[in-house]
Amino acid sequence: MEGAILGMGNPLLDISAEVPMEILTKYDVKLNNAILAEAQHMPLYAEMIQNHEVQYIAGGATQNSIRVAQWMLKAGSSAYMGAIGADAFGEQLERCAGEDGVKVHYMKNSEVPTGTCAVLVNASERSLIANLSAANTFKIEHLDTPEAVEIVD
Image 1 (tube, rainbow, N blue to C red):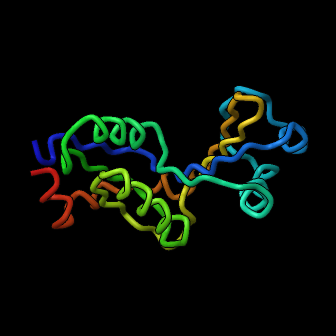
Image 2 (image 1 turned 90 degrees about the vertical axis):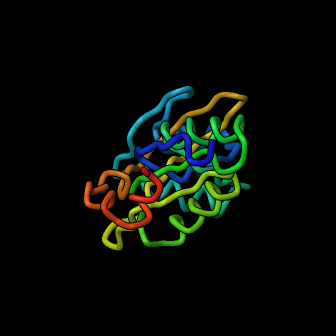
């Protein structure tokens, strides 16, 4: 069953933390909402890291599905491709996915940062603010790399 499942999508580094309601108010975020980040939200990611105990998680809908499938299957059963930035968040994302047992082959884009998703947890409710960034830059040519060809085969 090695390499039985391959997912491709928008990889995001989830940055998750329990936060007070003041943070949601400050960034005009509603409870239980999922939105794309706008300019007003960009300082949120650094603020979360600086002021809250964060958890990093390999995220994005498809990557989450692959992680769950990998959890249910034997080691080496899943692989994932998408685009990330050539930055510290990209390295963190790669570590997180690897720790979950997923073989990743990310296309690395040095021109834009890795996509992130702020996961604001308040009173057991979650609000998501996704900054897709590099996740939107995947190019079909990445599938021609030797590692991608091996994964697909």
